[in-house]
Image 1 (spheres, rainbow, N blue to C red):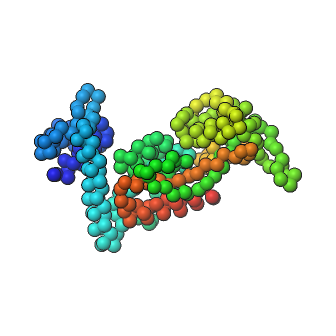
Image 2 (image 1 turned 135 degrees about the vertical axis):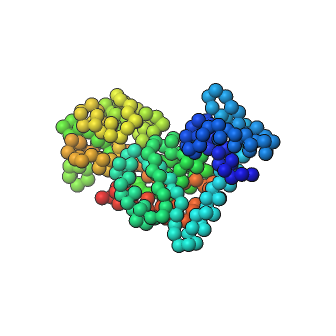
Image 3 (image 1 turned 60 degrees about the vertical axis):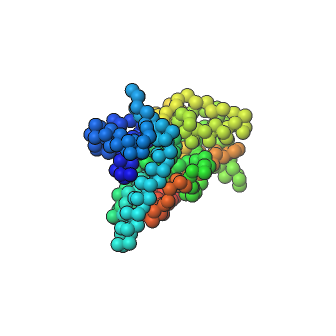
Length: 307
């Protein structure tokens, strides 16, 4: 079996299209189709069902796709380990980042990666949880930073940081705060009061949206969502203009040059706790380069959040 043909088939099956695969592989579509067809002839199996909407793996194709990913990964792993034997950690590392962290850590992560893994190639992808999960599943991502991922036998996870979501309001239009222990005034507000405010939240199935709705359900409330916006900076710009309130980690304000247009209050009764996790596939071996990259991600994320 030709490894190049196997790689072509896997890419077509993952992307569901010869056109998209030819662009991704930088190969002419007729040549790509011919190589995949030669693989089908060799295996005496139709691997793809071709239709006007793209290409879908047959049952035989699904089986080859599952094994093919592992074969190609093992080949890449072998090449990388041979490189490591020469004293250099090399290879490609693809990392997914959530929008709330991307702007904050992209530059320091790229610099740290260059310093600690100068022979390796870094790919950074920004996206929401569903995109990250799919990237990990099909092998487009080696690891991802995710909020509150669901437990899965296909994924390994390590906690990077646990934080409480805060109410972010326009500076001149925040809800009244309540006193806390010791009689000292602290900027806080109950979750019940937050539920009555006009909120700007991401649409489902965003991890924050699901977490917020779940916590409000425990007190018999639902969020008063006036706008659904799937973009961190867009949400904060709308809050700054007085259009509503957001519920996000307070460190997301580091994306702005100045936090002065905002008022930040902790939420209590109950608080909304969010876990930031580093996630990678349990179905593929982790290379030494990837293990080192994981530690780089951990260092950069913690430094950015706790700064």
